[in-house]
Length: 127
Image 1 (cartoon, one colour):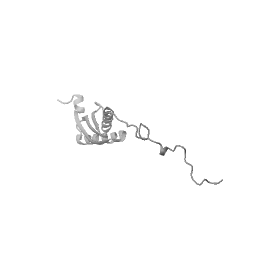
Image 2 (tube, one colour):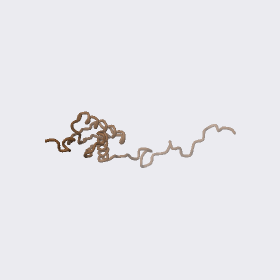
Image 3 (cartoon, rainbow, N blue to C red):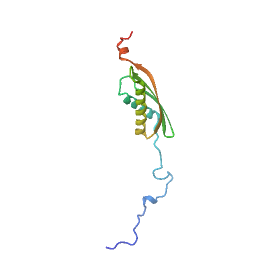
Image 4 (spheres, rainbow, N blue to C red):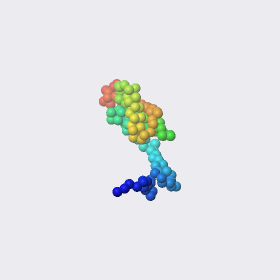
């Protein structure tokens, strides 16, 4: 068998398709993640960062603009404990999880401590 002088080209190579009215291939749409979905991710991530402690599920509010999420999280923490370290852990974990699950940047995570709970207060031993 002899080889042809010029390689034969397929009748419609995908690289040479003309764009249709919907736009270029791969540029037809975008995925938009609702703010409330990102807020739910933030809330669950805050609980994970706190070790799944009992108490109220942390409450989160998120504003997404231009692919970046600004997050406010309200948590309930145990007392006595290192509150600063717990808040820092929440900030880190919330930013990481939102980035992993949504691909968004998280430049700001504000943590508010809504309530402190103490084992002594829950048992009624404090006077």
